[in-house]
Length: 420
Image 1 (tube, rainbow, N blue to C red):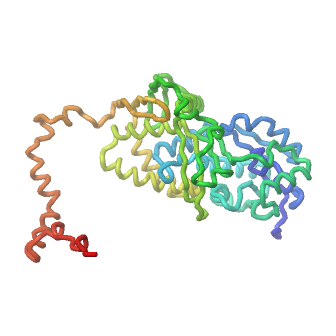
Image 2 (image 1 turned 90 degrees about the vertical axis):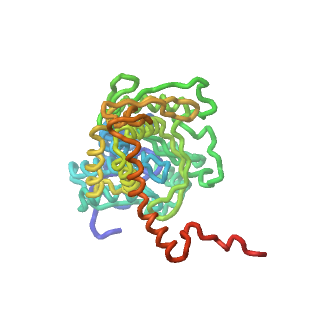
Image 3 (image 1 turned 180 degrees about the vertical axis):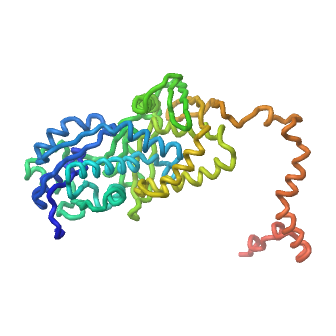
């Protein structure tokens, strides 16, 4: 225990096994008041009965706040516009949810005059970093309590035993297979048999998507319209952010779109295997990338790909509230000024294929791309361009020829002809 006493703590509360037993554990070990906070970011039925449960297990007050629109507009859509994907597959649904939850947790702590905040993240995962970097960035005076780094509970069985001993009602059982995190953007699956990277996920595990082979036998077409990189319409009908993504999740899910299975590098240094379902987000990312290919010039598009990878890393690492993220957002915002238009997707058995795109800011001109003579491009100009573009290669070859009589790219590789 630290020397400084804790009088009131705000706990990031989900109602799952871990955070359910943290409430009595905090009261028992810190002799403090516990306020539970749960952010509604699209968990669905997981929110049912949370307030009653938290109060019954010892919380003095419960906050359950609907942050779904902020979650999408200020977090999910920022990551979308940046094109950020971690390690080629992960669309970062859990990563950018944590800073929002932690931000509001800090605000409630300040509102309630609390001197500490707590979370239920384990000491092996990324989420502990995401929560605590946000605490540090927004209010470093708050004490941070991470029970998984303090208590003697080491397993799910230990947690269930503690819950039973303290009369904490939990729906979990020792037979629960997977660890899941769900919000409007995605659902993740970890643990259990997935810890074997050779194990093929069982179909019963999936929640948001049907198996591609069980998807409709007829393709479905969907048009997504963007304004300055932000999705606004589906098939010509305008929707608010929450309804828009909800509808795209349904559309993509019924066609088995958005599944990702990867072994990723955690920030804490170990590899982990996760399976993600992101149907609506996958449709948005596919369409947004295609619209950018129409509206962005070559140099901006290529450099934005570099920025996207760095953006994905800092989001995954929990560095949302940093000067670098703000600076990268300024770059992204500039690139998105003309990313306006519509993309048509063909959905069929797990695939989302781009079959059409249009924009008032399109840089594509059919007459410029044709092979005929035109004012903006004379094919005879290509000779001079190639001579200048290839000049370094030409000079190097001439020097080789003057020195050894042959270009180094034509020198034989005698190692290939070694005798046995």
